[in-house]
Length: 451
Image 1 (cartoon, rainbow, N blue to C red):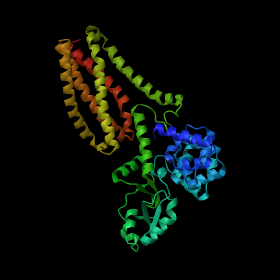
Image 2 (image 1 turned 90 degrees about the horizontal axis):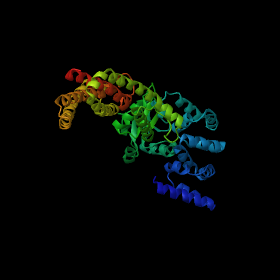
Image 3 (image 1 turned 120 degrees about the vertical axis):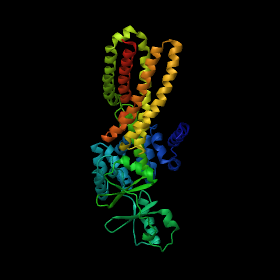
Image 4 (image 1 turned 90 degrees about the vertical axis):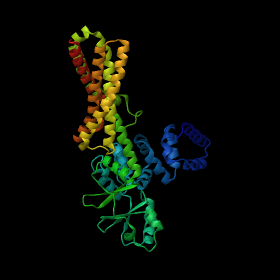
């Protein structure tokens, strides 16, 4: 939402409250999109927030509650009555209820569960048993299930009766008596079918499905590959136990992307937003990798110190170190970024390591040659020294080749070892390349100049 629009909404709400126009305020609140409420309520004091929440209709209140950040949800729960909490828990979808409980402190969870229907509490407890980051933790149990011998008319009657409480009605699932998944029907197919036609005659038996223990990253790939709006989830006995909808898949995609960005920047992943994370936690998330990288960089310093005699004999060599190290780091980062992306979207698999190496070698030769030619020309113009031009250009060639090979290989090796390929991104890769490029530079310099 635009800042100007948000300010206008806040101003309108404040004016209505101050003028005690409660009826107008209730009507105005219903016109605001539920997704816009978190940023609006953030700028209002607690008294106004609780007043606004209580003026919302039951359905709108639940929608707004789900959109709030965990911290704001906790504040709101602490101010709500047991009856109000019960209304939320009666209307909230099961996957959202599980997310809520996972984020809340034990004292708040106890109060939430005390105001949840026994049947819903049982479902929540079952969903909480699944391992973290698996399909079971993402799915909801609210879906439309039909019988194969229903007519289209029966199916519509059933959807009208049960659909309001379901997360989606666009996909309906056809089950056996023991809840085995037989097929899926798109609501569009039901709309254009003859009313007396049987469900089993129009259902699609080629159902894309996933297991409850499937990793959430694989689930996202399935949504992308098959263009799903909902994905059925089955247990070990192939019984349908839930579905994952596209909105939950997008949430996971954002979380995974953010986590990868943090790892690529050598930062420990955090569940909180940037502004809500404390300074101490920010420092804690960053310090470990910075220490590792700092200690690793000491090796580069030790190499330079070892070639002190060469530097004393030819001080001009030092001027080229930053350029060689920077070029190597940038070259490796380019390759690692493309490889990590390829692994993430399944364009590259671990068995493609030789193909990646061969492609990166050819790219490195072309890139390295171009950089070497430009650099040689620059050195000849500036210093008119063929030996220095040859030394620096040869080092650049080898550095670019090595960096691009490491940038392509390391993420694939990480994937093979069941590590996150994002760990092999810029900071770690650059540190390794820096060390090797300096060693290469002084080794070649020693041989060329006989130092």
